Image (cartoon, rainbow, N blue to C red; front, side):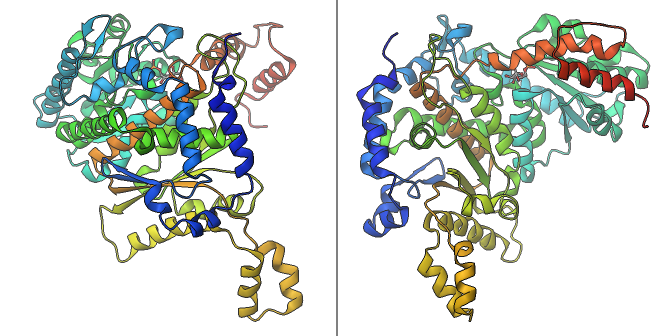
Length: 552
Ligand SMILES: O=P(O)(O)OC[C@H]1O[C@](O)(CO)[C@@H](O)[C@@H]1O
C-alpha cells in the first residue's frame, strides 16, 4: 500500500502534540497570552473569524500547516482552478469558483474556456427575471406571474432555499418564492394550496433531470396546472428548467428556450451560484444576485492568495481536522445567531457530510482515521433553551461555530445587543467553564448553607474547555452571504484534500435509492411476493398493507 498522509511525519508530530495538549485549559491559554485574540483572528470579505477559543497554540497551527503542505494543498488548489478532473471517480473538473468569477481568469475544461458559457446563462437569467418581473412574460392566460415554485431536492433545493430565506430583507421584487422538495404528499398539498395556476411559475431544478423525487413532484405540479388551465400547451408558459439534461427536460414539456444550462463540473451542493439560484434572483433581483456572486468571489480571492496561517477557510479546515481526527470529536455544531440563517445548518449538512462522509481514499485505499463529522445545529438563542445543556455539562467534546452579525436589518429596542451578548456569553462560558471555587463562592454569596453547597456543587461546576470559532459578519447582505458560503465550501475542500478523499462524488446516496425502487412494487400491490428483503422490511410492508386505508 502507498504511504498516505496517515504515515507522514507531519501526522505523527500532530498525534504527539495532541497528547501533550490533552490537559490544556483554554482559560490558562488566555491568561498567559494577552495577544491571543489578535494572534488567532482573521478578517476577510467583511467577516471576522475569531478562532482564539480553541485548544491550540502557535505550534498547533504550525504543525497543522505542515500537514496541509504534506497533503499537497497548494497544488490541489491550483489543480481545482486549472480544471483538472479532481473529482476522480467521475472524471470531472470541479469549478463552482468559475461561476462567481468577477474578472477574466481563464477557467477551462478540456481546453475549452468556460466563462463565456457562464456569462451567457447569467444574461439569460437577467433577461428572464426582468421579463417576468415587468410582466413582459405572462402566464398562459396572459396574467402576470406572482409566485415562483422551485421544484428540486438536495443541492437543487437546500442552497437556494437557505439563501432566499437569509436575504428576505432584500426580497422586494414582489414575487413570492416557494420550495417543493419532499414527496410526502403533504408537502405538495401545502405548497399548491395557496397558489393560482394562472400566475404561478415552476422552476424544475435538477442537474440530472432524473431524480425521482423531483420528477414525481414536477409531474404532479404539471397535472395540477394542466387540469386547471385545460390545455397541455400551458406547460410552456409555466415551467422552466435548470439542468445538464436537455433531452429529458424537453421530453417533460419544457421548451428549449426556457432551459438554463448547468454543467457537470458543478456539484449539486455547490450549485447555488449557477442558474440553480434562479429563484434567489427572482426573490432579490438580478443585481443583488450578482452581488451574492461577487461576495463568493471575494472569499475565493482571499482563499487563493492568503498565506496558510492567515487563510480563513484553511484555518477553519485545519481546526476541524484537529478535533475530528486528532481529538476524535464526532460532531461539529453550527449555531447562527441570525434568524435569517436558520437553514444554514441544513445546507452545511449536505455540503459537508455529502462531500466528506467518505471511507475510501481517492484511489480506493481504505482511510485509517476519522473523516467528516456529523454537522448539526440550529439558530441562536433558541438553541440555548434546547441542546446547550449538553454542551456545557455533558461528557462530549463538541466543537462549535457561532455566527453573528454586527448590524441587524431592523433595530428593535435593544434586541441586537441582547442577541450578541447571548452569543458571546455562550462561547465564553463554553471556553471558561466554572471552577469548583467559583461555584462555591457564588453559592455562598447567594446565602446557601454549607450543606446545600456541598450537595449542589457537582451540579454547579462547568468543565469548560469546549472549543468554538466565532464568525462576525458586518451585515447579512447578499455579498456577505456569498462570502460566508464560499468560506464553508473551501473549508470542506481543504479537509477533503488533507484526508485524501474525493469531496465531489456521492456514491453513498445511491444504494438507498436503488432499494426504494425494489420496494415500491411491494407497497403498490399486496400480491407482489419476494424474499429479497430482510424480515424487518417485510414485516413493515405487511403492516402497511394491513392498515392502509383503515384507522383501526
Ligand atoms: O439536481 P439533481 O440531479 O436532481 O440531484 C439532486 C441531489 O441528489 C443528489 O445527487 C443525492 O442526494 C445530490 O448530490 C443532489 O444535490
